[in-house]
Image (tube, rainbow, N blue to C red; front, top):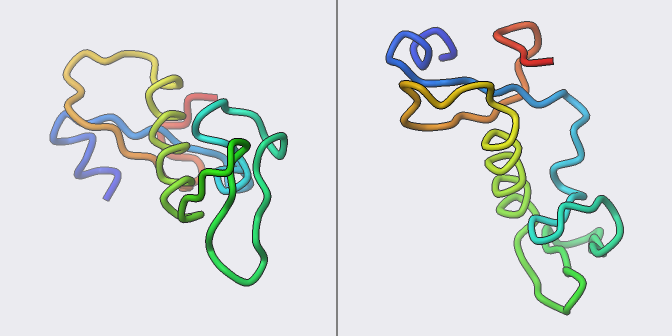
Length: 91
């Protein structure tokens, strides 16, 4: 998949395997400070009482991570965040 994305002019931004995307608030960016993870459900409660699906929050956080951590936007039409190791890593 990574090869197809790069071949078609896209950019792959990799997050480390243990990047805390589920525990990071997509509003303020802090880890654990404003999120209460409900163990049974896949819903998290943000600081001001807003609830959001844990996977949706993680997807938003990874999208924001991709926006911040790509080196260049030249020729990039989409950002793909994934957890593959050793492929076009920006670290």
